[in-house]
Length: 615
Image (cartoon, rainbow, N blue to C red):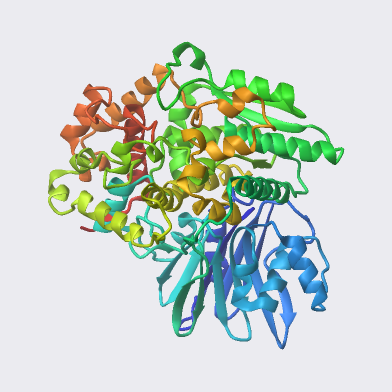
């Protein structure tokens, strides 16, 4: 895994390309702490920061390949999981392969297939290829945007990077937040509309999209999307196909020159990954799989059952490790650390994010990185197999908005009155919600229930899942750590998208089909365990800490947050321990304490990034 940057300009020559490229690259040091490389020519500058996972010598970038009177230069962030199949096809077409790096395979596949290479790839990727003969830049991002790729057209050229902070290092670039940015930040956030950022004129290559930049401008094209198709397999065939796709995805993602671990919570998803991965290693005669879990000091003292978090993890983790070929490690975090790391987590995203849901993963990966570099995790199973409560709750399904973010009136009230009078968050969110739903194709063969669940699956996949994938990339790569997500294999997601609801929710349960498929692979208590989300702290110290942080911010009337938000409402939130904001801020678990933490992140962001507010 790595970080990439670059800029292309046909109209003017930047006199200090080397310095600018170095400054941009330096911001991505944490993404790629092992190596860096640069390519500079008349119209283009490309840079790469590398985290070495496969082929230390053969995978150096930028990688250059001479071909047909020109050169192709690639900078690439990701991992291609069907490298061997591509390699075989290249060899059959008389290409010579000199390394076992997927970078070489990707570059030569692009030379061979052209832009259609993206239709051949199974993996996580964001990459750029410069063609010296045609003077064109090709950009592409994986099917679900697991790897980030931002861009802006500025200074008569194009700038791109893995993270926003690198773009901000380009000379004279100004960070501006306009009314759309405010709407994204407080109406949609911490999610965001695919293809956008909160910053004016800064965008991302959408998941499943590619682009060509040449002297006539930027041309963007969709190469893949979820498609509605009749599901013709019966129940047993469906189970067999799901099992094959899942095992194949996991085995492909176990390829690494560095030892791989898994994150194990004792939940269904992480247990499936751990069971299949440990079996794979055992069959190959390799050492036991290392598994890692996270918990918080004194959490057992304060844990209270709820609909969203029915039980704690430790019993189930122990159950899994007794029955698998593994060696377990527990990472214990102290609650005050979560608050102290809010700023680091915000900087990793370059925007306010998921509060302690971010900072906990940041700290967890920081500890695991001391021993490992790559982990496979169970993220995305809830989106693919219908694991969230909103798939089953009528109030969520009929809310007419994103079911993980229904507190729109409270969000509107957060805005400073002068701003609130100019920006209607509900109107903006409704527009994005309906715009997204218009992409969903309902089939004649869909039952009413399947059609409704198809809509919510589409929204969950392209909005909520993307938010968690963003979190995963930024919090892990900020520690030079790589995660892989087999449940997000595009073949599996596409297949499950068309499975009728009656099959998907087998026996009326969340992830019912998945539970049935793995019933003979896992302990019964794991298979039947009710969904329990990523572990959070229940220690009241966290509420007290973030409340004190926000109180100190609000004591200073010069705090920049006062320029955006309703000071009286924030003080009311403080006085009621967050209960003035009566519903979860985002998702299931981001309630009062997380809202206060988010507001702290907003102030930190305003202080550090100093965007110009333009409304």
